[in-house]
Image (cartoon, rainbow over all chains, first blue to last red; front, side, top):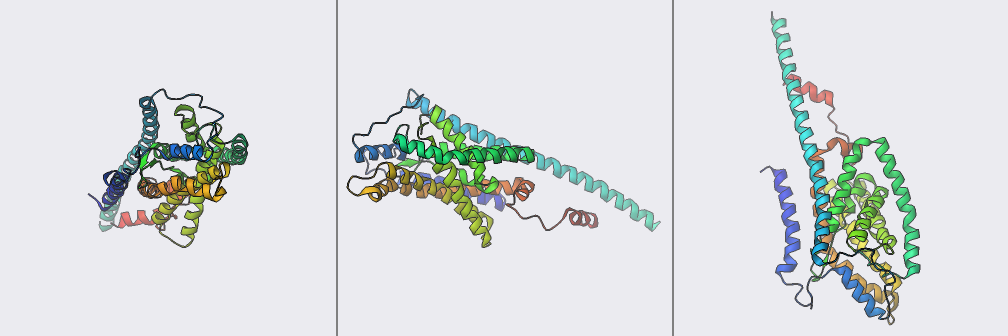
Length: 122
Length: 235
């Protein structure tokens, strides 16, 4: 593995560790429902501060179940990851193509200079 | 940072909408100008939007025992300046409001203000400041993404505290309450976002040198092509 790749892998490992540690250390154990979303907790806090507050508008569409919701969330992540992967794949391919073209050009140039020097020597 | 649908009183919802609108309109203009003048940057623009899409779908556990998600807006703000991110962030928030019942249309203005406006500007300001003091690129990128992420959640806390001041302790009491829910949870996630943004920037440096140089992220290479060519010939 090149040094570059090693650093990239290390970055990913760090992110994974940051995500796994709270779970592994049981940092959610003090809660009735561990690891709920902070957005939902804010809603609870609002109703604590203002028990009478009623949301005055409801979502136009609500995923009918947790499964559908997680499916749509994965769709969002997949779309994003797909576009990112396309970008980097395309770039890599282009770079390799350019490199090959450069090598070919350099090779033919070398041949030219070699021919020139033989002409000079003669 | 998503304030749920209907959870901001109408006056607040309208005020945040009015505050956000000019930024999004201005952003849409800069986005179309960028695409018209540099059609080759469309792909990288797409990739920046995609990064926000992925990261804001990624709910991660945090030290407080609750889950939250990064925002992914720092990268695009560094590459294309913050106005463009006002548009890309709004698209992401609309997707989530319409399909996922996450956030909402009445709270869109407030959510756009925190995630698509303040976040990118805070990240960009940190990036510019650090670069001015010759801080290495990747360190600046890390802190830009970190602050873009964290500032978004601080703004959400302020927005909610303004709308729902605590009956006893007032605005500050409510700010403490919402801040402990959002901002504290977000600190390790902001670190993750910083690391992921550095990773993507490293990949970009490897793959898109020309593009990054044009956008001013990388300095123009000192070795010109003719010198490189001359070296190739002498070899």
